Length: 317
Ligand code: TXA
Ligand code: MG
Image 1 (cartoon, rainbow, N blue to C red):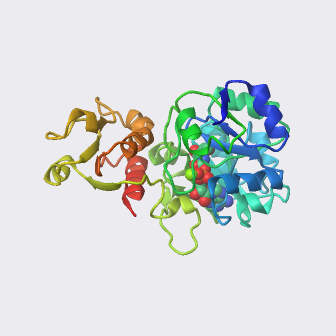
Image 2 (image 1 turned 135 degrees about the vertical axis):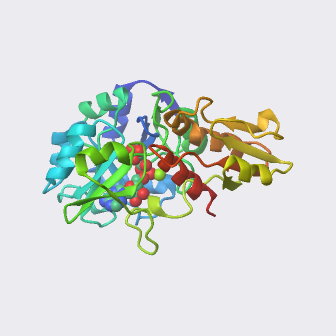
Image 3 (image 1 turned 90 degrees about the vertical axis):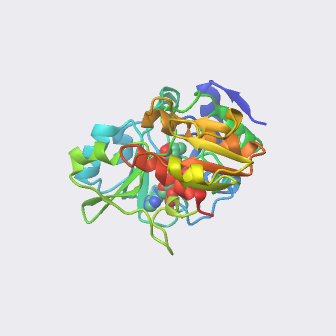
């Protein structure tokens, strides 16, 4: 098991030595290494068992640090960074040579993001290099939202887990790229499309591409726990009721299922709260003896779109 603590200097020292440190962000925990040190980055892929065709997001402390890694930095990307950083938004921008090809899987763009978490911002400000960090889970599994989640799955592979408590947003960042100046959403996430559109105008959302995924976060089966998941409205799930089922419900319990096999994401129907609790709920039920998870789809608006996206991917296997 890894050492867990709030010691930024310890995290800094290990990262400077080229070691892996799990870092808290407002979205999910990241598995971080010096983004400019290829050997250190290689360790991320190994620890996660992640294929090399799946590029990493690079985390920065400021917009000017981001601008040092990208050229040209599109005006529209800059406007979004100014508005939403620090925050759950990753921008795909043309990379400078200083960013190793390993980080971007050979693509000529790099995903950049400034995370909104005090500890990690302090850490990033203290470092002389940016941090490459995918979510701190084995490839294909649900992302971690607590230090304990990281420890359970990657505890023997990270030098240190920087403890920033439970993640506030709970689902990964929204990814926006700029193909011929046109902003496009490649992954729904913690920043709602409706929140971005006042800055960009109407956004294209392009989530599925099959053979050579632009973002393998787009792979159909991803973010998946081990158990079978059935999705539906409350009425549809009611019709699927069976012994040995557990539930993840948005607001109201499903009649006929024991209370200890049910997880309510937000008793007052708040999509932000539901997003924050979603991944922990999947993990919790995955660890129980329930045979199947009945999960309720949430309203397809705001963060609800990202929640439903993760539920669909978790169910696709
Ligand atoms: O909220 C988040 O984004 C978290 C925290 C730790 O920052 N990170 C995260 O990283 O979710 P990861 O690696 O689990 O997901 C990043 C996604 C991947 O699907 C990857 O393919 C895509 O971003 N991506 C990264 N760089 C890319 C690029 N240059 N072009 C296209 N997709 C990219
Ligand atoms: Mg991930």
